[in-house]
Each structure stands twice: as structure tokens, then as C-alpha cells.
Length: 199
Ligand code: GRF
Image (cartoon, rainbow, N blue to C red):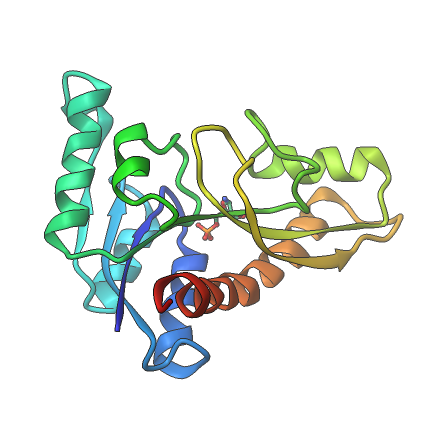
């Protein structure tokens, strides 16, 4: 069983999709979430973890004197849980260099657009969907990629397209994309386990 850790700052619907995938779906017998880390005490993802009986910790930046000690604490928790693969799921901070080094090629992120379009610093949440609608494109989608030291630029693992119609609002696009995210994240995890972690 591959041991997954999830880092999330918000609602955690992707975390739930991953949990559901090993309870009932394509990750059954392959992986399990052993740890949820949030940097936000009020994040609903922490409630979800409790409900699923998954260990969760809240590591808030304000409780640490600098970035280094904050990130060190995250690394300590990841290692204490014997994490094999880290999944960023709506984690609103840049992942630290040291963590990237330790988990080289084993940190995934999900982005609510078809990368390399509509990615980069400042392109998150509703900003992405607003930009997509403004650009008048006919499609958007979700991308799972490896995390690296820049925003949204690591190697792409999987993408799924959704159609955008002329009358769609950014909220409509967000809803369609989130649905695609919930499908694609477990699929991408499966792909990485089969291709990269099992040799
Ligand atoms: C998703 O849209 C994801 O692509 C982005 O943050 C959002 C997280 O949603 N990085 P949730 O917390 O998983 O519901």
C-alpha cells in the first residue's frame, strides 16, 4: 500500500475524492491516505479527515519564527507518517525546496485549468476561471502535474478537458472543472504509483 499525505488549505473536496477512490474505486488496494496537513485551522478538510479517521495536523505559519522552521515541521510530520507520495490539493502555499528534495518526483499538485495555459503566480481559484471566460476559450479543464520550485510548471501527468460554452459564468466553469478534478486526481495517483513507484 502506498502511503499518501495530503496538504490542503480549504474545503478538501479533492481529498475526499482520493479517499473515496481507495475506499470504493480505482485506488482500492493500491493506496491510502495516512495524513492530512493543513496550514489553516478553519479548513473544512480537517473535519473531513476526522470523519474518515485519518490523522490530521494543522501547521500554521504564524506559529513559527520563519519559513524554515515552519517547513521543517511539515517535513517532520510527513516523514513520521512514512509518507510515500505527497498530494497537494488546494494547498495555498509554495512547497518548500527541502521538502521537494526529500520527496523528489513524489509530490503532485492539481490545477483547475489546462496547463500550461492559465497557470503561474496569482492564477488560483476564481482568478483562473475568470481568466478563462474572459479569454473566450471553448474549453478548460484540470491538470495534475509534479510539483517543482515554480508555480504550475512541473511535468504534466494527466489532463482532462471540459467544454466551456459562451453563456458559462466563471462559477459554471469552476463547477465543471472541479468535477473533472475529482476524476483525474485518483487516476493520476494510480498512474504515478504504477509507472514511477512500482518500477
Ligand atoms: C481545486 O480547484 C484545486 O485545483 C485548487 O484548489 C481547489 C481545491 O479544492 N488547487 P478542494 O479544497 O479540493 O475542494
